Image (cartoon, rainbow, N blue to C red; front, side):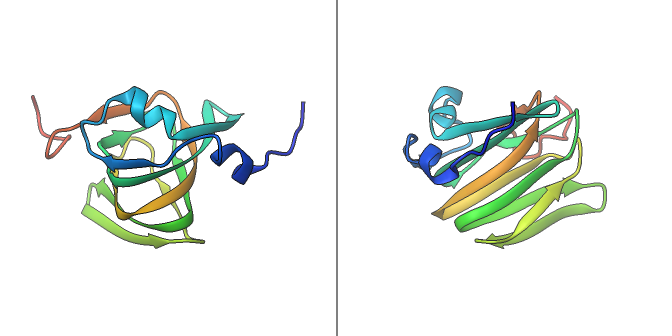
Length: 131
């Protein structure tokens, strides 16, 4: 069934996650995000947080990230080295499949993602390093 989703209405149901850290429990992080729709092998999500995420990657496909409000630094680990993107409201980026990436939003951010599943997470300083 095709339906329209009111993103702001869905976001209002979820509190901003303040003080996010790479080791914030998954259930606390999940509570800050709304699942807006299923999409391909994953879903479309929106949420708000302040702080730093853990590293993540998506082995099944690229992830689209759009900043709805606020600002975040998106760091993506590529074969050429770390790519650091300063993102503000209205910007979007596509994170390539299987690239480790993380967000830093000291003042807070609200974002929308089209995220393939599953998602791998890591709190290591460099998640690409062996063991």
